[in-house]
Image (cartoon, rainbow, N blue to C red; front, side, top):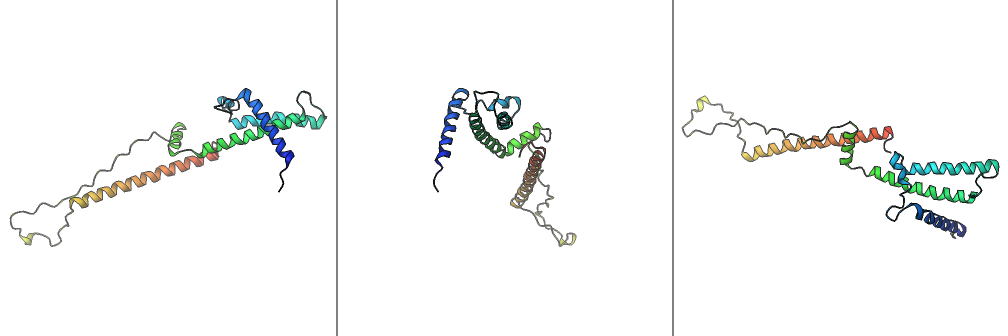
Length: 199
């Protein structure tokens, strides 16, 4: 399909307009410096651009209603260009905000829980006490009268078997602890989404 030359030329104009205005407001390190300034008063940068767009659309509405603009130095074509550039920048900053929300790590979720008063500082869990075994008395060197002993003798656990049981208890404890923390984090994220804190 053939390219729309007029559309491509218009995009080139928008890029030149953006570069010219960006030279006065942004820096090489941060091309969105002037747009992100609203974050200092608690406004997300892309929402700040939406406010600027609303002003531009007010001019468009005025022209559609009255057939002229109060400020003659900026014509309708200039207004349309500003709307196109602002919309593109808003889209870019909106994407960055969404990516930042998706990149929340487990540690950040835990920290946010504490800051919101919905959790507590993590403390190392105490290890379960090793099970206490009733070990049978070592066999006597003297003969034993079998008449006074039961035929069903208790099986003696070796040191290896006791160590294996202790490891199993510790593994079960950590598995339950990890499952509990994952469930707490999942519920916290769901609450934030319901409250509109994240999307």
